[in-house]
Image (cartoon, rainbow, N blue to C red; front, side, top):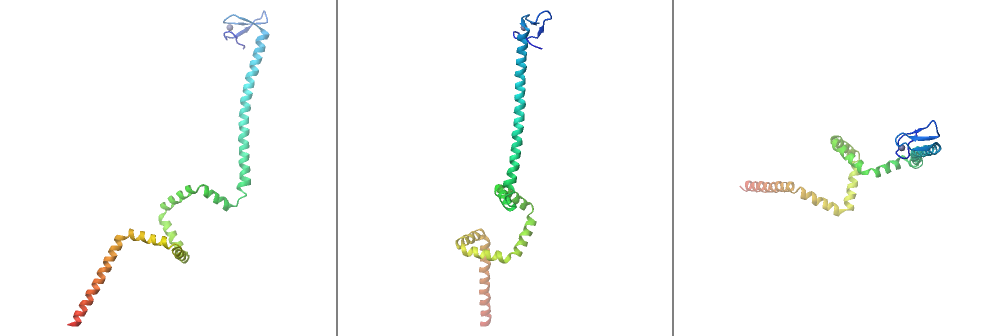
Length: 185
Ligand SMILES: [Zn+2]
């Protein structure tokens, strides 16, 4: 139903003349003028709708292309690597996350972890010891620092050990003195 360009109420086609009449402002318009206008507006609306549909289809098309490209990338880059390389790359990319999860898992499973550590140590005892020796020989300064740190941390314990050592030697001295005295008598 065409609308009046003036007010814009509904227009009614007159039966007596080829004209449209506005039911509100009573203006008259030639039938042809109104119908051409209607047709133009219809076309305009259709163009807008077409454009919307086109836009939607174009976006879907782009999304499809993106998916295909992703698939191709996986096919040519992803699978051209060996699984080991792929795993390594994944590890490098997610290092922090993996380490965090691993630490959390270890904390949660500390008993199991301790058992595993012991098993590993038993199996590789000789290698571990040899490696430690080499490390110490290679870095005497680091080893010295480590020992200093250890001594500092265990100073209290060391003091008690020292005292025990001291009393033991005193005891020994006394015992010897006593024995000498006994023999002298
Ligand atoms: Zn009107």
